[in-house]
Image (cartoon, rainbow, N blue to C red; front, side):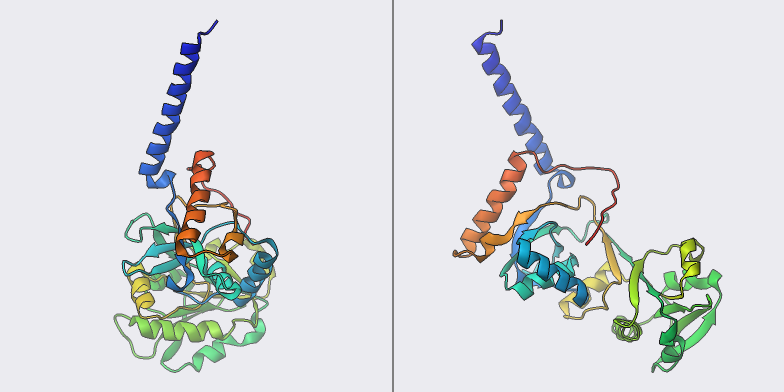
Length: 308
């Protein structure tokens, strides 16, 4: 029979073990995300949100008042935050009149936080006559390129974009005057015109493309076109954000280790009376409860997320 003293000792040891595990988790960024409640007005966008997705989120948040996943931001060291992921969520918060938004804050200087890009698959985009429209863009020279050159010219960033038409012919959008580098503001200006030529006029799917030969076989049966884009750099993102310049929607994606998912936060407290201190207290109480109940867990495996 176990003595009361032995049971007490085991309980103390168990509590000590849980406390040590919590300390280790809190001292390791991968195991404890930095969740904060920040003013919506201090979040700086780097790309335009997609209106249709924002409207779907507004409708759902208005009905459920539940935030499933926090937007992800980087501290810009000036009291503002660069939005890395969640433009439609933050836009929905603005539209609903919320003063604050729960976010996950990451260190943008961390080399593990990587900036990648999306390309645009335009389903049934044949009727848009994009090659003709791009040929008419001021400051752009449309030149046919071999598929074997695509990755090379995109990585060197010597083009604004590449159009792959329905016949799989590749057209590079080069500067009208050859240049060793393309100035960032000029690049964004042309990219805006490239995207505006089809935005809202064709079903658009974001795709990753390491090699043209890796396109899914199913695409051969679809009347589609592709717009491929060079990847921007993190320092360019910070520069543009500080200058309040946004890039076209759906061109950037960030690879973020330790991304927090499934916060499932009831947002009703944001509409209740109380000042800044009360809002922060309520939010921190919720995060601490998640920690105490062991509901914040770190998984090393890659996962598939079925997005909205």
